[in-house]
Length: 372
Ligand SMILES: *Cc1c(COP(=O)(O)O)cnc(C)c1O
Image (cartoon, rainbow, N blue to C red; front, side, top):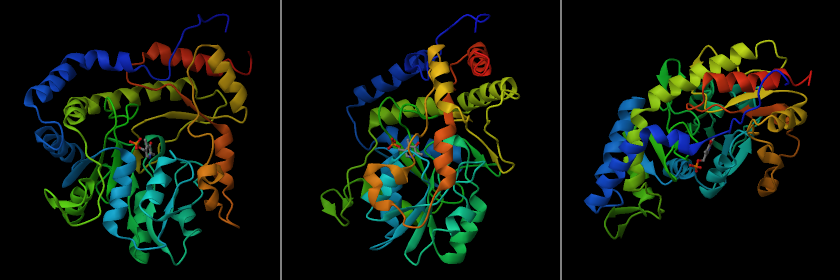
């Protein structure tokens, strides 16, 4: 690295991300403070309408976070006791926690070695008579191959809920996620559409489910103080909704910027010997994360850190190996693909506020690894 000056490239820089939006966001917050209305009001309703427009769906229900968007979708489906929901072992643990909180049992299918998403093929291997729903995850913003999964679900009578918490604005067969099955979004601050706090939404194209989810998120009430269902408190507050309305207006541009920077990485790392993310013909990724693979991952991570690059691992421990999910150890079912992937994956910084020059610097650090 003698020829390139060392610099610091953080994994995320929230203040840099906020700076260009600061005035719009200050105004949005002031609007809510002036209104004196903080929960379930006009900002949340407007945000839900604007989400519907952006995603081309009929209904959007704002909730407290992405985990509860998944949980509420499952609860609205009333899967019954002992229900199994098939999902990915390579995801934020919150995906599987949502299933547990909804009273069902997560069953983990192995991932596809190229896309690192679960597929109809890997899902088939773990089906049982208790399988009631499938929950594919659009990992790193790359949509799972949904059509074969939906076909399988249709054939067997399963519900499908998409964990699109990393895929705001990704396209599957030309359409944003949420078009062909309920999709959960998270607005955790690091996500492509991030709040300044927690938030989430459920996108629905089937209006029969949305009324139930709206009830469940607000304690199961039909009218004030009349509780029809044992719901929960999972409301999106007005300040976050107002902030998210500003952020949503910039989502198209910020996703385009992520794609542009991903292109720079793909070019710069083409012959570097590391594995690169591959966009599939059926999808356009939202590049929530830019994840490379190396058999010498731990040493490469060290090398990046010692050269000022804030790289991370998403996720170091597959869910079946987490203590919280000890009970999920699935007897004879082994998950070799995800176990290998978890040893090789490494996320490079990729946020819209990075410069091309920073991305080229990170790439040069990766390329210098073997020769360092
Ligand atoms: C962030 C995330 C969640 C959880 O969302 P929260 O808003 O943090 O509850 C669930 N699944 C995936 C894939 C995520 O990335």
